[in-house]
Image 1 (cartoon, rainbow, N blue to C red):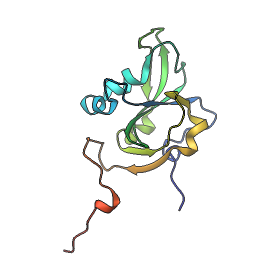
Image 2 (image 1 turned 60 degrees about the vertical axis):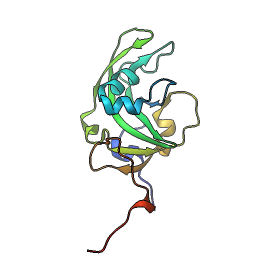
Image 3 (image 1 turned 180 degrees about the vertical axis):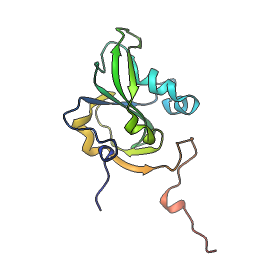
Image 4 (image 1 turned 90 degrees about the vertical axis):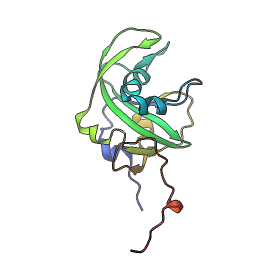
Length: 156
């Protein structure tokens, strides 16, 4: 059976300049908890925060993933970077969400085994390995996802 890649949903061409930002626990705060509290904290602050390195540039597509479990990531937003603010140790970019992708925000779980230490990676170099694990009927709310063996069907 053929797998479905994230790009099958997002339809970002290989010629487009795009990067994926992988957001994980930073030693103090879990971005998944932040996302459940307020989506904008992750979709702006976590996605567009800059320390020394610039993660994005104007015109680039920024894909935001948040770690849910070992190799499972939640798609929270896809934005086109519209402005760089030249801020260090703060939010350094502004961006506009891609309308064509909005229906997937908070609903698509991606299976990806991240081996690179970098928090941002070029999309075209990893897009074939970003596999759709599940599309949720409603946005992720923090409830545990049932494993296949845990689902029971009763006879009516």
